[in-house]
Amino acid sequence: MGRGDSMERLQKVIAATGYCSRRKAEELIRTGHVTVNGNLVTELGTKVNSTAKIEIDGEKINKENKEYYLLYKPRQVITSTYDDKKRKTVVDLIDTDVRIYPVGRLDYDTTGALILTNDGEFANLLMHPKNKVDKVYIAKIRGILYPDMIKTLERGVIIDGVKTARSKIKVKKYDKKADTSMVEVTIHEGKHHQVKKMFESVGKDVIKLHREKIAFLDLRGLVSGDYRRLNPKEVKQLYHLTNDKKRLEHGKRGNR
Ligand code: URA
Image (tube, rainbow, N blue to C red; front, side):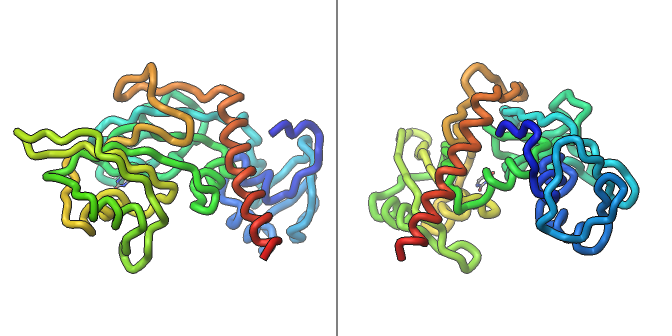
């Protein structure tokens, strides 16, 4: 994403600072909250260069450097920037002065890979289901997952009235003594409690849930509670991944 001195849409520049989402930025522009180099801007198409002074309600926004982290989320940490019950949050685990936030969510009792950033555009691209970024989970479930259940899960099941997209299910291990199975689940959506609800729909309880991978990023070299910065190549690759998917979608639409 070499921005250099090229002109970018104002709402995109605001969202990329992590100040708010692009949609919220559009609303702020339209409703007269944003000035560029001292001039009020209400036109959504307005483009600005990297040196433009952007203010929202008179306050200069910080075009801070983008930061990207991969965290190995432990159990009993909340995926949020703040918790009113004073529980530890994923942001508390990362040592930075920048206002970062999690990309998507893992439940309080789920462990594994979580990306945090202050790059709003990047976060939106990764989270949008149409960009089909695969997430791989390992679920420990009670009992045996039979072939008909696997088929049902792979085709998609109804969760809260909406059908899930296709998924990939692989039984890795069955522990006869404990009567539990380890199952690998690959999905690209992020509905609330999706994996647990998918299993619930075929009558299975998830005892433990762990996210092993987000796209090509795994937790190699990290232990629970550790994190590392993503390197620029990884960030670029993730951007490319979502852009390529977007291009494919457009292509499909054009061919209809
Ligand atoms: N699906 C769930 O049910 N929980 C998570 O934390 C992530 C995916």
